[in-house]
Image (cartoon, rainbow, N blue to C red; front, side):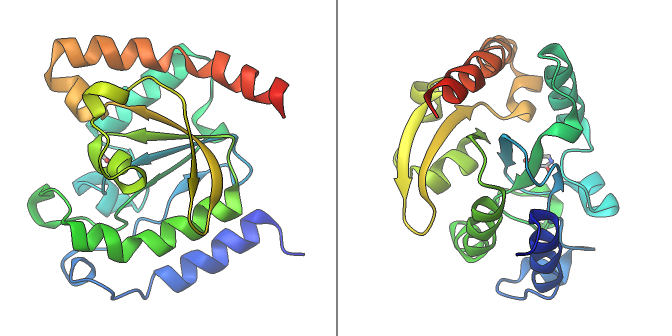
Length: 195
Ligand code: URA
């Protein structure tokens, strides 16, 4: 049986030649994901930005700095979690990913989730949330633990948060984002007890 790291590396190799949508031809590289292959928490954002596209690592720009600060505030090292995006290739000029681009990338994310099998999936922003729950409104469901059954993945604990970029530009969103983030340690504890 291959380790989770070996399985992720194999998936990464396959993904690096993906040409399912047009994003790949306009970006520098596929930004697969980074972190602990056996992570209990998986964070899923929107798509790589300029810095992520340059370095091939998710959340290394301004949103990443906010995320790092929040992880530090709950004493969780970045190396303990897994970070990725619903779209693995940078959209031109950092535009929002299109529904068809997200849909083409979904099977890759599905496979990553199945390998990592995290206890909690934290979605960051509406694009990640709506990939799992198409009709959910981030303003209504942020900060709530939602148990869902996803085709080909199975039962997951979804914890939707606002996107760090939204938290950066809006003071009220920042306060909500910070308060929601502080719930993560208790949620992990609760899930650990239940399993
Ligand atoms: N960087 C990422 O990797 N994802 C985002 O959603 C934003 C910035």
